Structure formats: C-alpha cells, structure tokens
Picture 1 (cartoon, rainbow, N blue to C red):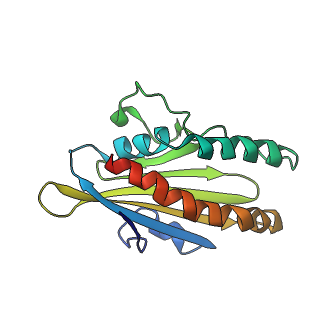
Picture 2: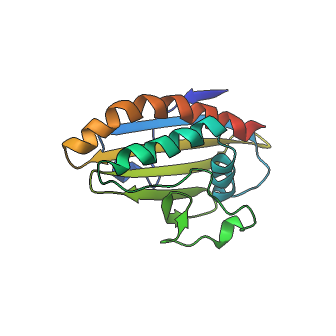
Picture 3: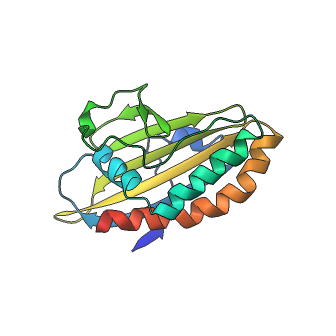
Amino acid sequence: MTHAATIPADSLIAAHAAKAGFRHCRAIEIADDGRPAMAHFLRLMTSMPGWIDTLMVLRNRLVALLGLKDLGRLTAIDPARAPGSYQPGERVGIFTLVANTEDEVLLVDRDQHLDVHIALLRRPTAEGRCEVLVSTVVRTHNRLGRLYMLPVAPFHRLIAPIALRRLAW
C-alpha cells in the first residue's frame, strides 16, 4: 500500500522543493532485493499502465499546438541497459539524469514554462524490507507553466500511487 510522505530533507530533491509551486511525495514499503534506486526507477517507468502512456501521447499532441516540446513516452526505456550504466546528463526516458547513486536517482525535465524534478529514494526499513519514496517538484516560470499544471497536478497525484504499487508486484 502506498502512502503520502514528506519529501525527505536528506533527499537530493529537497533543495529544489523549496523553490517549487508543486510538491508531491509518495512512498511504499517493499521487499529489499538489493537492487539500486535506478533499477526501481526503470521498473517504475517500464511498468506504467498503457492508459498512462496514452495520456502522454495526448499531452504531446496538445502541447505541440502551444510550441512546447514532445516528451515522448514514459515507457521509452531500454530494458537491456544496466541501471548502473546511466551517467549524469544522459536521457532516461523523458528525463535527464542529474544524479545516480545506489540509494537515490534525481532526474529533471526543463522547458520554457517549467522545470520538473523527480527523485526516487530507496532506504532500508526492517530486515529484508525497504521504503521507496518518489518525490516530484515542479517550478513554473510563467503563466503558461501555471496553466499547464492545473490539469497535470491532479493526474500526477492519481498516477504516482498507481505506478508505485507496481513495484510491489
């Protein structure tokens, strides 16, 4: 079961959260199989339900009319690539990797209207268990960014727990 959480103060995303208009964090406790944070992030992205990826396609078509970039699909991840091979500056699906450590990944997407940071933090809890926290922060730059977030924020709050639950499968 996922639950709402506070963005951890020791997370790489915490500094970005202070400047953000949208902040969201969800967590789930799962069996700790020793996989690094990037492995969990890649699984999260590749296991997105098809309807969510369809929403991304629709989003890309709509924002193209406004001159914004096409982000592609959330599930556009190379399944054969090793989690540890990703380096800062590289694309990981629709995001650019900022940091990749054993316990946390930080990614960003920047556009003219907003910056989106997402972090996945993995930390041990009980013996053989770990908590996975996914934090998202969005800093808007202008009116277009604020308008964009009006429909996106509720969808994000709906999608995040759905995606996280798939980590427990």
